[in-house]
Length: 377
Ligand SMILES: Cc1cc2nc3c(=O)[nH]c(=O)nc-3n(C[C@H](O)[C@H](O)[C@H](O)COP(=O)(O)OP(=O)(O)OC[C@H]3O[C@@H](n4cnc5c(N)ncnc54)[C@H](O)[C@@H]3O)c2cc1C
Image (cartoon, rainbow, N blue to C red; front, side):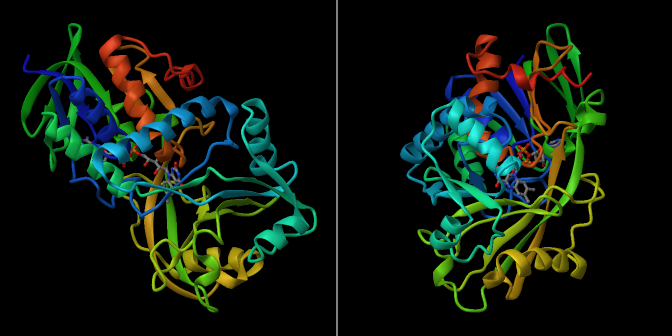
């Protein structure tokens, strides 16, 4: 066997795993059907939110703490700027997941935060036109990662540590081979002791028994030009945010990260049409723009100016929107991260460590039980 571990998919998650294993001295063979970072999966669009008072579930918070540390470590080691702290505002009614869920995480894990009522939101962030019965949780530590640069940095470091990374190579199949694996790509077969599957929206192709629980959706990112200038949208004045109304689209967005002439990014969370990675409609249509404009007109009218550009990106949703992270339910030699459900990127650094430890040590101290890969039946 010429390789210790094969990795299928070198995007957000796979690039971090490749880096972890190669730097631990493993002989790593990585495949990607394209050349990451690319725009056909789930990890493009120049920005990703990272936040700690996690509305989805307090179970994610310990992983997030480690994710922050590892992003900072990667920045120090590489000299690349990857993470910008902007502060983050989770907006909705008091009983929304955005507010109540974030608050539950903040309380359970004793995280610094502020609870704002509608008046306080308007005073502090006047661009948000919130109804009177709204509240928000604000945390200083939320911010933005640059996903393409994170992938590049991990892949460069992995290659420097000796990883054999083959882009433009699609894996067609894999199977167990004794206590190892065989992987088929480009008419060749490759053997290794361990397999890592981090194939993003294509994961269902490689994990047939998980495929029914891995539903890609078409999600669109938009960049708008604020009609009255961009100053009030600059970092420091405008935070990252998630805005969850009682009905209708949840939106999220970023401050102006591309300088005074760039656009300001905003998007709808979930609610995109079900698709597959191979057949997704990659064009942005008038109806897509109209849908986000309807939300902006009501909530952030100061952003509802010229539409500059849009891009299609894919979520891969599990039924409960929680990750599948850990060992394959039937094959001990296989580990995976799949079904990141539109909120996975911020975790890529710690996912690299979790899957790396599972391969190297056969276990991890990280609390991944809630993400068990067999839980969905
Ligand atoms: C619009 C949008 C906004 C988002 N916003 C946020 C956010 O603000 N914060 C956040 O934390 N998360 C966010 N996410 C989610 C996050 O970006 C994803 O969960 C994460 O990037 C997924 O990484 P991945 O490695 O699973 O997938 P990818 O990065 O897509 O990587 C999978 C790779 O596998 C390769 N591959 C697939 N099949 C094969 C095969 N058979 N052979 C070889 N290679 C293969 C693909 O080419 C691809 O490069 C967002 C996602 C989208 C789409």
